[in-house]
Length: 570
Image (tube, rainbow, N blue to C red; front, side, top):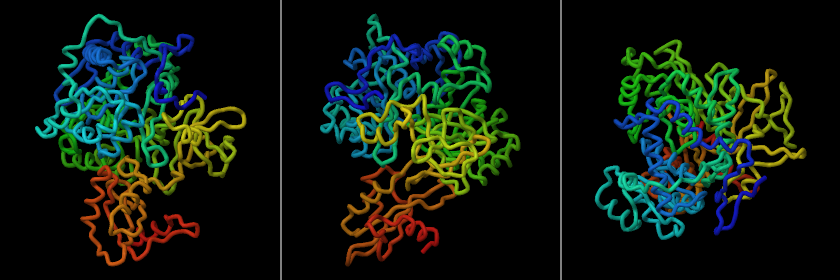
């Protein structure tokens, strides 16, 4: 395995072209350029009133790349993107890659401490951000000595926020000014399929970690779309020819681009010559989403579980004549429950409803039996009866010795992928060794963190995660982090955090709290305390005050007890 870290003076992603690599041509920018050459006038992206062709998207990302290069961003360095869904997110992602640098996705829900961690851990040297979001980064700017340049997206931030950002980043460039003033002439670095792709995720410990892939591998494992029976592309020319011949499908991507589900779906559509439609609203408003889908004639809506799918279906039932071209709903991040599937079937009986299985560490592994294959990442969890997924040959269920279990085995094992898997976690060799082990035969695996069995027909039956991670509307929440925030409150003696079933979110973050002697329950105050320390989706939605938080004999929180308390409503 390639080393997972290097010293601060030579970050891991300081990469050089690998001409001997047979897949050197499979960089994401080379693939996109091949498609743009094949269908330059076709619409690539619709977002917030903007309609961008493939040629236009290529030209604007090229100008951003030239600005970054002129601003001192070198090949292999990391550039963070902090933005809601908008056309500029896609332009920025492609522009960073085109500059030979590595984009870093940053969760726009993070508070100052979380932003500090990701930007420092990733060794980001530049930031592309909406002004209102950059204002939070400004508060921790002194703790980020590597961060030397910023490109700011106008988003209607209040004057105070804009002033704070300009003070923290005195040399910052306005996004449109950066593109307009980009220098011409100097060639941009040649890119390679061996170049890096970095995806920050919650990982398996609660602290965001960067999953480091080669671009050729992420293309094969998560982004390449092909019809059943169609061979894998042998060159960018194959990708371009397929784009030229394809049906120009339109997909409304509702998943945030700063998450794998939204990002991989958007990329897969763009590398097929198809059209990505983005909602630029900052919250889900079903009537606006459906109006957008109807206006753009979308064929597929990508969602993250029931939290998105339920209100959309309910709105369509009030106006069943809308969206006549909509034929598929694809969920990644969390599965669609039977009640929500029923709502969609009530609207249109022949609608295709697809759940997909995979994750940031494994790519897209398979689709739910009876679903529509491809495209969506992120583990699907929370189904007590298990779910059956049709998977590729690189996916196995492993026993305790990392040996694949045979089809039909009753043994519960760890779901894993081999072959095209990440290089490891950026800047974290210990987590790399744990998640990407090598078996006795010398074969490397990427462990998904999920447990399951192998059905007699070869399908993988997903049973759930091996940890207590909470999946709320597709967002991963790790109890230890929330517990630490709760226990930092002076009135709290102890706390434990578990999931509770939730019709809309799938799972709801729920806390059991015991108070210090003489303290009185104050749920609003406790939640307000958490909101300045945690992203909003991590803050408990329900708090149960208990006399004592039960622990096991070895002093660990008793999650089984806590779950039983929540289920009983006590």
